[in-house]
Length: 185
Image (cartoon, rainbow, N blue to C red; front, side, top):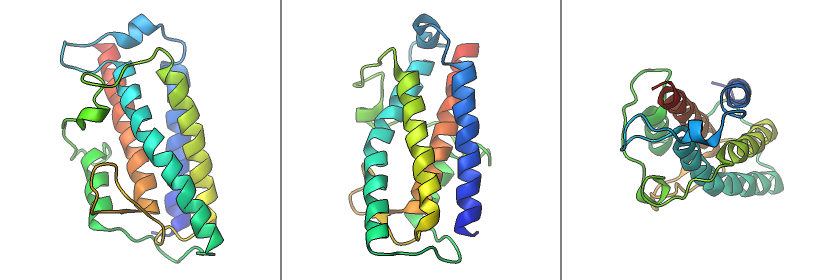
């Protein structure tokens, strides 16, 4: 797959997610968004708090990697490469293939355990989505295979930038679907 094809698809998916967030969640009351299907399940705001926690880590690192790639003049290549870390992470959250399954979030990103849920999680996620869309648009100018970003909890591995952008998009899709299901229950 060419970098342009990947980035155009991710941008389209992120714009669709942004529209879904605005129409389905933005005007809802905090009481509605905090409703849990059962005591151990996440509410919609729990899902958004989890995503915001992860995006707070990765957005800064993506920006740094882009600046480094531009400074070193890493120009776009013919195709996008993947490594084991990226393929595994994308596969674990991809709702389109239907192969993903529920698994526990890391304790520091589990809103039921440690992360306080704020009433403005939807607004924060919309801002984070805007930043991610901007980063995807700017990634057309660089080689997605050269910048390497360390995962939050795997110190010996790394993501290529293309893999990380796809992982974040799929992860957001997964939790927006989860939030819609929790509100419907």
